Length: 157
Image 1: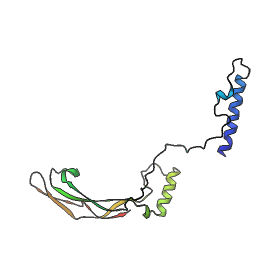
Image 2: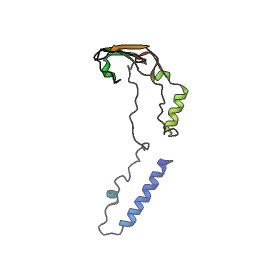
Image 3: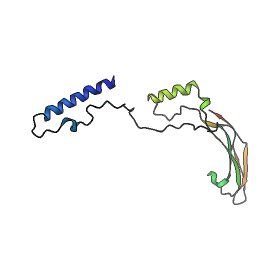
Image 4: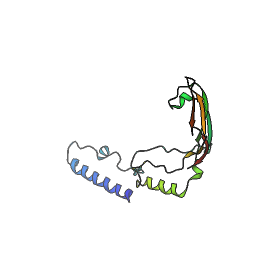
């Protein structure tokens, strides 16, 4: 329905320009005023900002446990320590774990029915269990124990 109205609107614009400039001695050719006259209409893009959608690249690893050796001070927990710990975290794609809920929520977000809250219409790779504790010495030779610092198991939730 939208495409069929475009030629009508163009015709009205052309007739207005022709009426205004038709009798003028130095009238500009109507085609010069409206370079799009006579061309087929271009397909319309959906309104709104264009965003790149995050999609899993071929070969992306599925959700699972990863590990990284880091200095305790790099973790940003307020401890000054040069000791290193094995930090385990969850990362990866969860496309296979999408449920009917995710499909419905994605559709409602596309139609802008759900927009004020920050919601994700796809499962996320998150820890489902944590290591009990990680212990280390700080720069002042004090012993510290941090609970639930590293992931032990991961799943798409």
